[in-house]
Image (tube, rainbow over all chains, first blue to last red; front, top):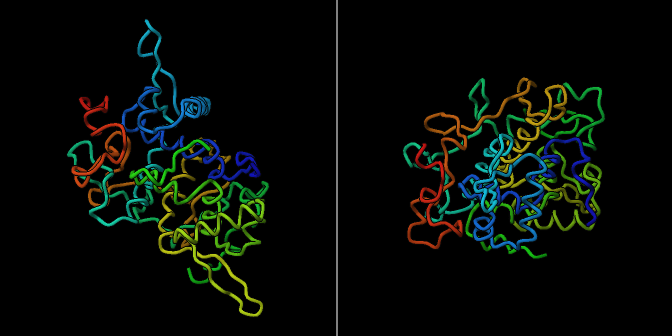
Length: 171
Length: 171
């Protein structure tokens, strides 16, 4: 494959992508959030080859996103559970789900986020924790922060978001 | 490659992954949100081969996530801009960024979401639009919704989240 090793890029988006590895890993995490944990359960849900599944599970464990838990000792049997870091991936999953659903007509939405308390659909919206303002591309920039001033440019290519963004003047 | 065509799975998470294609596409979108639009700009930022970049840009245009805009007619030159659907991907990008940053010490955070208005970092949190309650894996399930009752199981493998989730009783 010709791509660079994304983990070498200091941008945390690139690093996150490297951590979760590939599509299968995200679908494994989706199923882990649904309560699946056993090898056979993942395989049945995903229809993926045992080789690929083994590799992806191992990678998720190595990166501290899943951990192995022995649910039986005789015979020794493991299940894969979410670590704290794995659980923290939930917002990515929800926003991805919502983006997928936005392309569908209301009646075609078959998978949705549902409150565990009352069983009704919830509508995820991303807000700023302190101002509660909804965050969109119009009011938020993904930018090189103050901590980056004395570092190599983590986004590789432009020195500063504000120097190059065409919308700068209009915002 | 052995994987199934993810777009065949009715789950919108799987479909979203198919739409954005692969890692490069997400990094192209990251750069589009930073205001990059020209082929050369993407190439310089990502260090990706022209062949792969051409293929990924074409795929993003085909899927209605980017569109081509002629910024010069003599010579004819295009830039790639975000469509409405592309702009709607922003929350995925922000949650992915935040997940990456959570693994880093505070001083190591070099890329962060910043308010365009006042230039200060914002802290994205995912809440329910109506109750404003923060949404986590503890209070939200990704589940087969009411619309799915008469359909094929969109998550392929379990009929209903609540029948199989081990935390069901405790929530």
